[in-house]
Image 1 (spheres, rainbow, N blue to C red):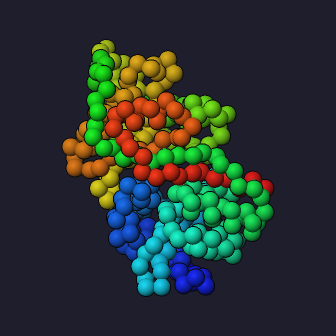
Image 2: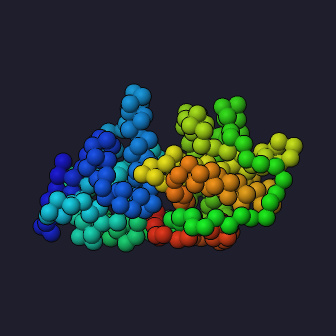
Length: 303
């Protein structure tokens, strides 16, 4: 489905992530760090579809082009958790507002919008104006890319890959990560809309070999770090979780540094998100050599 607002911009909604990647590939690849969330999920869902895993009918992929046909923006609605917020990459201001009108005209209920500023703010504000409600910030995030890796003071133990035998502990820690992240940022638990992955998703990540424990000298897991497979030459770290009793001991810094080194050794760039309200994690990543790239936000529309 295509929509051509009076600005001359074209908004094209696609249901196929493969078709989306083919249409927007040059745009996404021109700045693969900023595009990391969209490209990672598009490639993941494309692989799942090839495995026969169905996608919800609500999913869509957006390509924004100007009157010459050049792609100038992109987005998606593929979140597996309510209220299923769209995720938007940078696009012209007029396109962000036109998208709000298009979603309203399509009859889609949109109660949250995530992604790059100011695009998400413009879109959410227009949606609130059309459907009623007030835009509130759920979370301010910041995307960082690793510059020169600076090694932290060493700690005992080392990095080991989590296996299917660790599925129970990984599931437990990933569930705790969601609530703990809210608390560390000074928010009530459950404030963010993100949900912990289910057992099937945990197994998928373990089979992909992209989850690692930092274990102490006795082999006891102290910390968990994950990473997505590279997409357009960029791998994104996350989640990064240390149980409360083990925090402040350097496990996270050493784990993130070693995972970052391994990804670099594979030939990929490395990036990660931080919650701007969590000074501890921002300080840790800055000390390792991660530098800010772009500010993003998770916005909600309260009616």
